[in-house]
Image 1 (cartoon, rainbow, N blue to C red):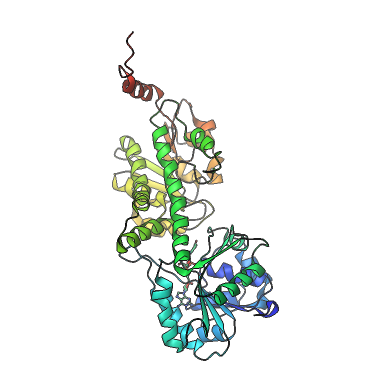
Image 2 (spheres, helix red, strand yellow):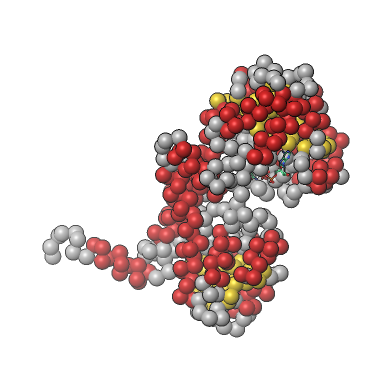
Length: 464
Ligand SMILES: NC(=O)c1ccc[n+]([C@@H]2O[C@H](COP(=O)([O-])OP(=O)(O)OC[C@H]3O[C@@H](n4cnc5c(N)ncnc54)[C@H](O)[C@@H]3O)[C@@H](O)[C@H]2O)c1
């Protein structure tokens, strides 16, 4: 494949695929996007972003002459050299990733390959479990095309490690590229493509397809384990006099073997990717005759986090208590509420008998549809604070960082503030009219000291 003539197709113009298509075009390559959703095809062809993502619309507009979309898999295969397939792989009932959409895409790609004489490289980017690409999808390609993987076409598994909200930046500046290859030819070609697209000098790791499939899931599982470890520390700190998770994890993170990222100690993780990967790894391990206890424990601990907050607030919840949940997306700057811990908390608080009101700078509309009659989603923080007896700061959104004690007291009665991310400690800790509870910090030093002291009472064994 000549560097000047590389052309790409991207199957699936969703949260990841649309940004990848635009990013590749921004490097000067022609890209055909493919989607079964006509709205996504029309949006891209009209120079609009099919999904909400930072910088996507601008990147599409700036590269319109190299970017087009179609609903025809055939058109895309025949008019490109390499195809990235980034269709959904939703969790199935077993906790594995369903290949339903990928199988459909591979069937159409296979049929198009039957008509193509030139070598074509197919790269699966969707998250899948080990074995899916070779044993689940490759047979479809060979059957539908009547051709053989290796001599006739290439196959790789190459996932991305991106965060929603910075997909384009993360795709173009990755820590490394991961290539699982069917054979040397397919892997070398994809590595050469990445070298032209991503930041110069990005390391590339090439390996078997199965090792790459495992690496993808392992990476997310490791990060979520780190988050959960910090949440465990936060829990311990709440029961130690003067305990402060920021102090402990701040020092811990200085050790280069550990590093400071993902050690906040606050609420659990959420979103479309992290929560399902531990479940899938647990499923895989059991299915192949071993166990992934660590992944399953991480998942269980994470799912227990909303319950911990509800238990913390239970003594405050009486008839007519209004609790305001501030932050409903799974992270700041996002409209995504999938597996959001604060959505689960809002639901559980409502079930526990509280009147729940809520606000999010971007996710209000989605949350309103999800929560229905279990919570009233307001249009501003001020509206929430005017009615709340208890305020829960559930995401570290800058909007919430800017709040002052007066904002909480406008309702004219004492208020309890639970600050999951310790955004307002300097402003609210020790305030005479606000009961301030910071997750990850000791709230009752005397009781914590008494409990800790009782552990050692008479246990030291040195007589007076
Ligand atoms: N979103 C993330 O942060 C992220 C990160 C890493 C990996 N992933 C993985 O990438 C994959 C896609 O995720 P997403 O978030 O972009 O999904 P998405 O649901 O936002 O988008 C998928 C798109 O694929 C389209 N599609 C479905 N079947 C198709 C077919 N046969 N042919 C062409 N298009 C088809 C859908 O219409 C949709 O537009 C998943 O496996 C996901 O786990 C996502």
